[in-house]
Length: 201
Image 1 (spheres, rainbow, N blue to C red):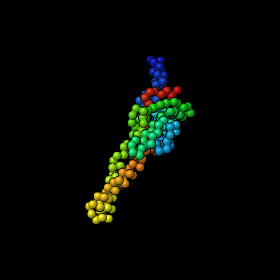
Image 2: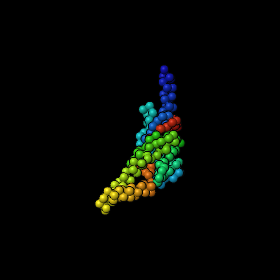
Image 3: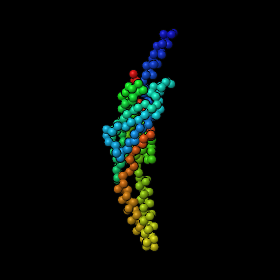
Image 4: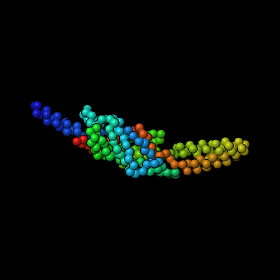
């Protein structure tokens, strides 16, 4: 009976000595990263925001060091094309100083001030479309143009001309302005999931 217990304990220890498949881990960014300046090959640094646990035991404590690398960075276009950022998580450094190779998948990111989210199987972070903001900008400048035209000409005709001119200025502004960039700020978090077990020994 006692021997069976020892074997069971040993088997449990072996299972606990790995990050289980399907584990989610929250990582906090040490440095900011944005598609405005990021290039392929740039390093990204994280700390574990939560401990990694299994069967009630802490395998990796919070604040452990994690390193990743930018694998793709695309700026937002002026007319079309949304910003895209891909990051590969490469290593985890344990308290003992041992470094483990790993490759969890990016599952979610802080939305920030925009509508950025993880999309696709490759874990790319993409910024949402800016059509609503663009339409609002055109409408605003058109309204201002209408008001100025109406006051200058004191007629609906003048307001119409002003609205057209204002709308044209708004459209030109939209065409010459890039959309939102993907931006992961220092202190923001990303959620990663391990699709295969990672031995810690």
